[in-house]
Length: 170
Image (cartoon, rainbow, N blue to C red):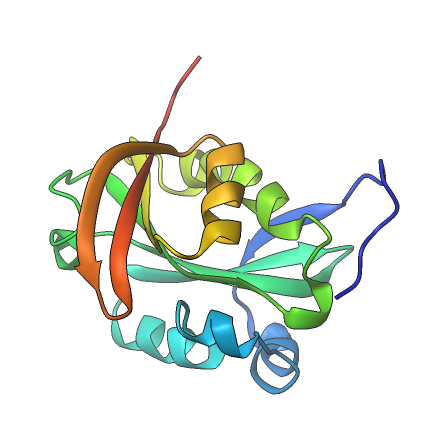
């Protein structure tokens, strides 16, 4: 894991997946064995996006290079997580193993509300589900403004915490 010097400003952007990102996300992408329990690799998540028009693959770029990935999912298929018809679900969030520790996930989650507002203006909330034992992810999301309202659900590897980000907060 690399780390940037303290105080270094990250040039991080969120972009919709494009074919030129395939090699970086399919061939050169890895997560730790521990993280594999909690997330889907981009190759699998993008396959699901191609089968479901309500799933949108998003690439985290640092200095124009893919360093991370997640999916924005909306529509009826997320009703088991939230009843809100105007909620966007974040799925399969990860940062490529060699790039972890640079703050890319936090920066991406900080940029996310504006990205959702720009491209999905009808959405008023962002939600995500995190395994309660995935402390690093919980910390990142809470630092980016996601709130734990006490909702829990059962998941494939234990209890999961539902986090909320209310859009258009002043």
